[in-house]
Every structure is written in structure tokens, then in C-alpha cells.
Image (cartoon, rainbow, N blue to C red):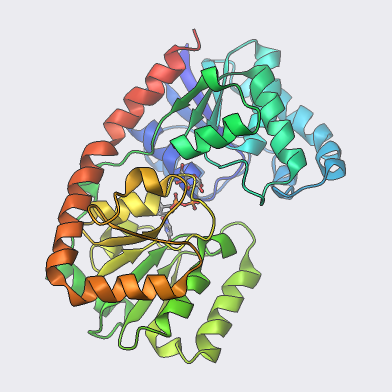
Length: 382
Ligand code: UDP
Ligand code: GLC
């Protein structure tokens, strides 16, 4: 029997799905992925020589948003049950089912009951965040308490929020996202020249902001800060992955109306973030809500670039302010502009932050350790 099937309702390449791809790619042979729809993450797993399972019938679930009402959730129940049956059939060769999201949790819990196999919930969210409806939060905690042998949280912040929301603490294990430092080239003059050519950038300093376009990732905060940063340009990498197209359009309008269009470059979704990061002068993180983990922060550190991130959530577990990066308060464009100016004006500080950041990230967030930690959590399920 194979060891673990990681289940995701989406096959977009969000951070939770990239985590799943990474651990399957670097973990034991007996780990595989299951998606409720076709998509880029599922295709990437297939290109790595794995054979991901794709269940049809999951499309209805993607219409349920995290702020969904009780009525909407109940309406979705029929779809959940038939999907759970399909999952139970598809997962019969696996010892443990690992739900990689909240929606996957509901389906996987029922499947694990049908199959009488242990369930693990891989928790990528701070579920006390007001963006989640009370109904979704209560249902998720209830399902986890009733059915999950282990809840694997992506940070202490996510773990603490789960427990604060009524989750059983003794079942929680923290497993950080992990990376292969060798896959993250370090910043260099060549990388900087290549980047400028690729995106048509000038010689002015480039601030890189990476992530899906959604209000809580705070791309608008960078645009506001840029007004106080003449002579500096921004490269915004990412797209509206989960239906946030209106925000993406607003950002473009904001750049135009604030007269920033010349200095702001929207690159859309890119598959080679590590290479792009190596070419920017600074990597920023601007989330307006506590970030559950923050892969882009670690990736910026691994690129050997100075990182300025907003404090809160998992980011405070990643960055030591003033040592491995700088932390600024969320939704504070003025503080962000001050921090950017400070680093750009002080090359010695920039190199010190970059070097300590890279060393710390390579040591603390290695994919091999992540796979070991996940394997240990899975072993505990018996
Ligand atoms: N990312 C990507 N291409 C893009 C923008 C982002 O591959 O154009 C990746 C980024 O490198 C990171 C992930 O998407 O690994 C985002 O993860 P993070 O934890 O920062 O945020 P999430 O979107 O999961 O909340
Ligand atoms: C989620 C979180 C993000 C985290 C990622 C991987 O998408 O929003 O903070 O880094 O999962 O765990």
C-alpha cells in the first residue's frame, strides 16, 4: 500500500498547492496528489513523473467562497458526498488521506470515513481571520476535531489560530514550507541585467512583489508607497488566481491615476519566480492581514535579496527584524517607503540583510526537513 494521498480542490498554483507539489516531488515514492479539477499544478505533478489523480465533479465546489453562508454550504453537501465517494474509490491504495485545504477537508473527511483510513488536515490558513465566515470556520474545526488524526499547520501562527477557534491542540504539528536552496539562484549583476531586459525595465532600483493579486496581499500598499519613492520602479509578479480580477483591474487603474504607470510593471503569473527574484534589488511582502506562512518571504531570502515584509502571522517566525530582513506594520505605505529608502541608501545594510537572510532560510526551511517533519506527523496516525 502507498503511504499518503494529498488532496486539493484546486489545481491552480497557489502557495498551498506549491507546498503540496514540493513535498510530493521531494518526499517518498508513496506520496501522491489528487485534484478535483485539471490545471497547472496537476500538470506539473504529472510532468515530474507522478500520476496525479483528477476527480471530475469538483468544479461545483470551487464556486463556494470562504465567506460562504450556511445555506450555500448545505447546498454544496450533495456535491461533497458524491465527490467523497469518488475520492474513496480513487484513494483505496493509500494508507492516509491528507486534505490540503478547507474544502478538501470536508470531502476527504467523508472519504476517510467510508474507507476507514486516517485523515490529516494540512492547514494553510489562519482560520480566525475575519475573511473566513464563522460558518466555514466552525464547520472546519468541527470536522477536524471529529475526523482528523493530525492537523499539520504551516506555522505556529496557523496552529495557534486553529486552537483558539476550538481545535484540539494535542493533534497539531507544525510543518513549515521547505525549499531546495540549490533551485534558488542568488542575486548577481547578470541576473539584474537579464531581468531588466526581459521586462523592459530601466536602470532604476527594482522592488519585486510576488504573489497572487488579491486585496489582502496588499499590492495597493506598494503602489501607495511608490508615490513617496521617486526614481524607484516596481515589478509586480502574479495574477488573480482565484477570481480577483476586479482587484487586478483596480491596481492598473490606480497605477494610471497616480501617475505611476511608467514605474510599475505588471508581469502576470510567472513560473520562474526564483530566477526573477535574483534580478530585483529588493523583495517586498505587503500582506494586510497576518500571513499564514509566506513562501515568497523565504524565497526572497533564498535569492540573497534584502527582504522587507509586513509583520504578523508566519512572517514573524521567518524574519528576525533588522537581522534577516526588515519588518514593517501592515497597511502602512509610509513605513514601507521609509524601510525601502533605508535599505537602498545603505548598501552595507542591504548585503548584511541579504546574507543573513539567505543563510537563515537555507538552514531553517529546507525541503528535506519539511519532508521529514511531514513523514513523522503521518507516522503518528498509526
Ligand atoms: N508564485 C508563482 N508565480 C507568480 C507569483 C507567485 O509561482 O507569478 C508563487 C510564489 O513563488 C510562492 C507562491 O506562489 O511560492 C505563493 O505562496 P505564498 O505562500 O507567498 O502565498 P499564497 O498565495 O499561498 O497565500
Ligand atoms: C497559504 C497561505 C500562505 C502559505 C501557503 C503555503 O496559501 O496563504 O501564507 O505560505 O499557504 O503554506
